[in-house]
Length: 81
Image (tube, rainbow, N blue to C red; front, side, top):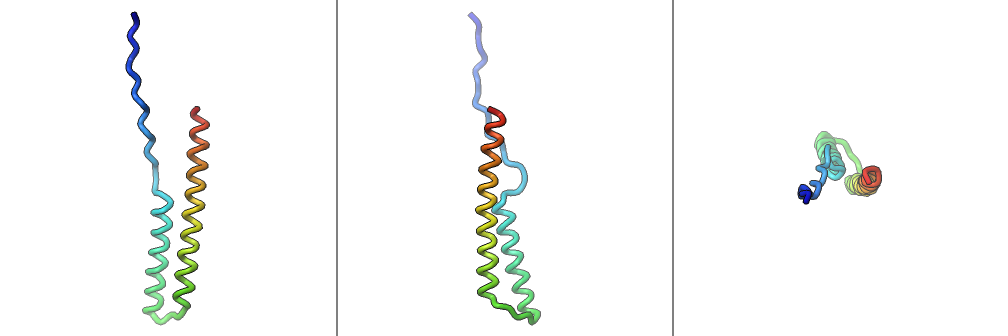
């Protein structure tokens, strides 16, 4: 009788680097801070429009990052199979 070693499930790979959400929200918060400083220094711009543009751009970046991440995971999964 031959004895086989018990197989353990492979641990999920840990993502490397920063997540897309972290980068996007960091940029949005930085833009808000720069806008607040600009207003304090006397610049004038439409605050509502600036926030709409920043949040829309952030949302689009989050969607693109999610799609790109899913495509990358699918590609790496088919490569190892």
